[in-house]
Image: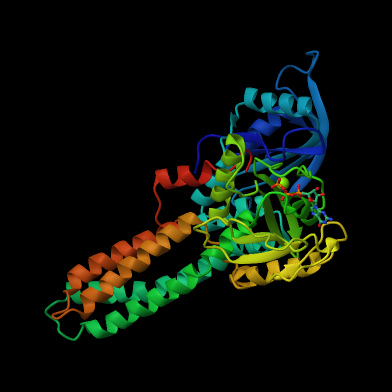
Length: 452
Ligand SMILES: Nc1nc2c(ncn2[C@@H]2O[C@H](COP(=O)(O)OP(=O)(O)OP(=O)(O)O)[C@@H](O)[C@H]2O)c(=O)[nH]1
Ligand SMILES: [Mg+2]
C-alpha cells in the first residue's frame, strides 16, 4: 500500500460540462472531509455512493473565497476501487479555474499531485490489473476506431493474459518436474526424458509464433493503417488525398511540385483508423526544396502499410519514379479518369472530380488489411505492442536454443535446462508484470497522462 494520497484531474484540461478530480490513497477520505461538506459524507459512510455538497478550501469558513463549487463527491472504498485504495472522486463544474482551485484545496489539505500514470500504476501494484491490462487502459483511452476500442477492452478483460497463461502453464509444469528431478537426483523414477521436454518446448515456441503473428495487427489497431500516396508531380495525389479524407486538407494546384511537406490526416473507415499521407511528387528534375520534399516522400514510403502508386490514366506513359525499398503492398491507382482513359494497367481507376472508383479503392484498402489478422486480434483481445513483441521474440529465440540443448547428443543436464527455462519464464512474466522492475514500470507509466 502507498503512504501518500494523490490527486489529479481525470478528465481532459479545458472547459467542459463536468471535470472529474480523483483523490486516491490512505487519507483520501480524511482529505476529502477537509475540502467537502455534505450531510451523509465522510468515514463510516457506505462505499459507492455519491452525495451533493460544497467543495471548499480547507481554510476557515469565514474566509472570503471559501467556497469553490457545489458538486458531487463519489466515495469508493478500497479494495473495491480502480486503484484498490480508498478513493474520492469529485464531479465538479468543468471550468479551468474551478479545477485549479479544487486541486489547490486538496493539496493544501494534504494530497500530493499525481504523476503520469500514477493511478493505474497503483492499480497494478495493488493487484487490480496486470501490466498488459494497464497498457490496455492506455490503448482504450487512445482508441480512435471501433475496432481498436473493442480490442483494447477485450485485452483489459484478460484476452492477452489468457494466451500468456496457456503458454506458460506447460512450461511451468516442465520446470517443476525438472527441478524435482534435480533435487531428487538419486531417485531415478523422477526424471524427465529430454525428448519429451523438447516436445513441450517446441509446442510453446509454436504458440509464441502464433501470438507474434498478431503483432502487426496490434500496430495497425493502435496507430492506424498508414497509407502513403506517391507518384509523379501533378498526377493528382493531393486531390485524391482530399477526396479520401473528405476535406480540403492539402493544397491542389495545376503547377507540378505543389506539395513539399508530407501532409497527414486520419480517417475512420469500417471500424478502423487509416492515416493517409500526401507526399511530394517524385521526378528527376525540380529545385532544391522540391528534392528535400522528395526525400521526405521516400522516408514516409518506407514506413507505409499500404502504398498507393498513382498514374494519370488520361495521359499515356504516366507513371514515373517509385520509391525503392518499399515492403508494403502497392496498389496502382489510376487518376483523372474523367479526362478520358488511355490503356494502362492499374488496380483501380479513379477521378477526384466525379468521385468514380473511390468506393472500389476503399474495398481494396480494406482487403489488404484483412490479411493482417486484425479481426483475429480483436476477437482474442490481443493487442501486442513493441514491448510485448520484444519479449516474445526473445523468449521464442531462447526456447529454440533450449530445444537445441535438449536434443543434443548427449542432452544438457536437468540443472542447466532448468536454469535456462526459469529465465525464459521470468522474461515472459514481464509481459503481464508477474515479474517486474521499477525501471519497467517507469517506462510503461511515463507514457500515460496525468490523472490516468
Ligand atoms: N480533371 C481532373 N483533374 C484533376 C484530378 N485530380 C487532380 N486534378 C488536377 O490536376 C492538377 C494537379 O493536382 P494535384 O492534386 O495538386 O496533384 P499532385 O499529384 O498533388 O501534384 P504535386 O503536389 O505537384 O506533386 C490540379 O490542377 C488538379 O485540379 C482529377 O481526378 N480529374
Ligand atoms: Mg500535391
